[in-house]
Length: 234
Image (cartoon, rainbow, N blue to C red; front, side):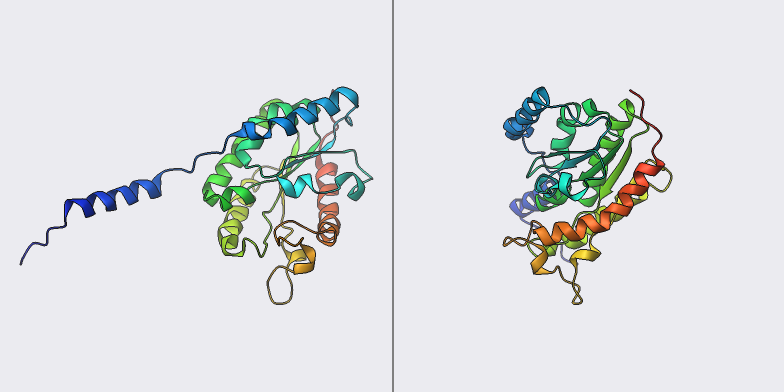
């Protein structure tokens, strides 16, 4: 049988493709949020943050949420900064999370990570690092992960996003401090697709009606998280 010899250039290209596919996606520079983080610090210097708050942290889905109005029954603090990856939240955890000694953290990130090419496994690994940082300082804090939302703008990525949600949900099976809220159902219509009216014109960010649906769905889960948390200690 004749031996088929592959040109060296094709071998190099194939090997290069294998290497490229296996290389992890680089994290974006967290310092692009320097102004937002500085603004949080300036607010803290002039205002008293709630004691042991329900701390909302993550990307623009958190930043755009009028959390204080949506949950007036609880001491809420919003520390979302738009466009962030989990890696960005990790970088600023000691500035926008830990100082407040939160009783419950409501966490939303991972959406931008997968849109940038990171895998579901990478999202889970980064989230586990966040959990580790929080619990090393405040071991009794409940952390409530909001499942990455389906959107028409990123519908092709929904399978990978759902996979990330499922992987993160598994983390809480043996840890009562870790909770998950799958809020995808309120956003989907009878055709199984995201309802346009629940999103802004970009079909990525939630509209006021979308946030209303999410707030209604989240409230009982958040109440459960607060009820399970021990009384905070100063």
